[in-house]
Image (cartoon, rainbow, N blue to C red; front, top):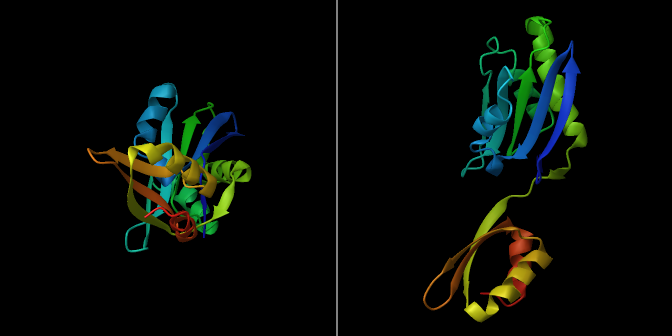
Length: 186
């Protein structure tokens, strides 16, 4: 299985219709469809497909046609994600109608091509299960801890500033968490 860590985009043109594809990590998906609708008010549709692993390590899939004929937009996009064995990702496609009707088959091929085009520019990485690790530090060790997290490559973290110190909740691969523990952080 593969995933993406950073967002990317691509443009596909089919019979004068323009398709803007956005491939994002699943954690960045929330609210993105509405944001794209606001940024592209003249676009006819904002279709999406997503795949993610739930807490039981089961693949959850979802897609929408956003007004396109049923099964002609979201499902073809989802099928490309399935074929590439991508998890914890979402793809959103903004469509500007170009005046030429594509038909249901042409539309399905166009949406699938839009996803393939964004995958060509994406930086796909092997999927690693993410684990959470919670620890506390003093206020004096905050900068040192931030530096260690950056060195190890952990960029997902939350901090709660309490009276006696700082509680950290970091998310990373098991290998990254083990490396963090070896630095002496408990």
